[in-house]
Image 1 (cartoon, rainbow, N blue to C red):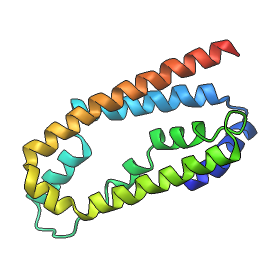
Image 2 (cartoon, helix red, strand yellow; image 1 turned 180 degrees about the horizontal axis):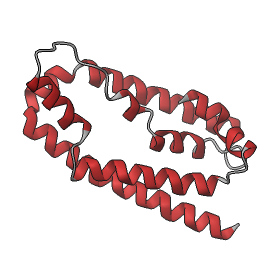
Image 3 (cartoon, rainbow, N blue to C red; image 1 turned 120 degrees about the horizontal axis):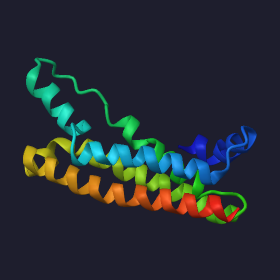
Image 4 (cartoon, rainbow, N blue to C red; image 1 turned 90 degrees about the vertical axis):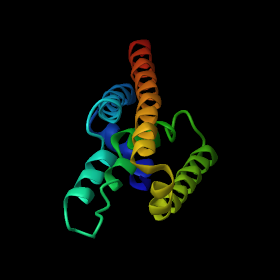
Length: 152
């Protein structure tokens, strides 16, 4: 994530991709991910089936790609755009992102306790509600990207 904060805009400029196009593409990918959370086999459901159906006691960190997903990379690049945000604002964004990562770490460490408390049904409901919220964010990114692209 920090790599994309530092080098994301530089890479996009080097390959001549406008931020608006990146925002639209990231929004589409984020929307597809949100749809899998709402309707399909989301990662938590897949993880629960693999845990329930096997004798493996090790849990693999399957959520790591979701934490640093295309949507997160999109946010990192857009929230640190050099032409729009000062260095101090970019630093604040970076510190906020790192704070969120610490909260995610704490929640992952407490996941066994949380899962015992909410159960499989609660996890499924939370996943679907979060998928709906994520789909709204994705649609907003797509619409903002389209507006930005055609205003250029």
